[in-house]
Image (cartoon, rainbow, N blue to C red; front, side, top):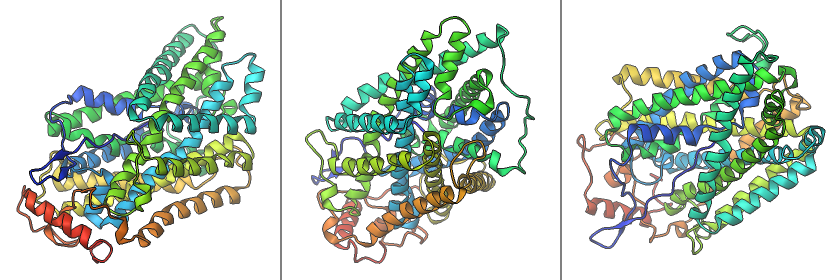
Length: 538
């Protein structure tokens, strides 16, 4: 996962002195620009070794996940983003359908997905740093040391957090260069080097499994569920659809271009790892770095493997720097609508929400301590990846539910883009998407047979307890909300059902394409502030 939430645009002022939070620059994104945005935000090399264990079968899993997850979810998010263009993203989508309780839950799950994902990328950073040194035996021993991994993970994370306190611009500079140097260049090198290695007739380690997996052996296909997290982030990037010149025509093209590029790069990168390392020796954290060393060594240039490790380490730092502030930005919409205490809404002089970043850091620190508890660094990495996948898929299913409900409760709402195929298209897309997410969700609770994770009971228990706590926490916070949490100066744009004076589940009374007047919006905003927590519609 390598997506980055985008901060809301600077508010404009209405004639009455209020601030509007939904100004966008129409027509600034071409089809190719949107495709590149999707590719660079979703693509990551970190997860390739987990799929390399499957060899040729990894191609099937990548194509399957693209068909039942990436494509349908992209279309659903595009329709929601082009329909509900005010600030809030998925928080607004779900709240429009089910009210702010589930909207807050969905937003919290997205935040926690990224928070849980942090330890995995931080462990990968530690391993990348270890592979910068010589000799190889030292690299492997250092990369497997729990104390070393924990220390480097904490150092990288808190340095990135300190950098984030200086403002989003500072984080973006580091992340931009990190994306180029740490992902795009190493990815291209891995694929080109692997192709040359194969053409040169070097030893090939890929086994000859059948293209279609053996689904009767569930334990062997668990790792494939993590591909869904590789493709995560479309719900964030879909909000940019309103900036496109012709979204109804160009966005589907951009999605197809991006999907083809993402799948091809993932498949080729995965095969290059499987080409050089036997499946039984693949390590989820170390094998990407080992593949570079093996491939370069076959041409007498082993030292370039250490250089690639340096590149990847820099890329990880840039990725962490970008994502540290992202979740806090998303939670600000929840805070401004009154569902977080005012103490968590404060920002520093650089417009960075320090309290939420500190809470986020506390979560990440606790999760990193799992490294000490679990049998190996690899097992800790796996359990964090699976927990993040579980939380993300629950959020995905909620978004599908919001899409289905809003098609019925707001049939006349103007949609900049609509899932093709009418009612039939809706049924196909939602059936594929929900079925795929449920299948991956079930698989994510099972321990993989390829990795030593200790007691299966403890492994499954950690996932169940972790998921239950994370889902329950925002609901508890919501139940504790107080009138004082609503900041009257925040001017969060009201939901459609608040403007209409109806409940979220009731059908809209607006005529097709109707847009509320400024006076109606301001009246609904005033009413939302006055009735916060006492109004049963909340």
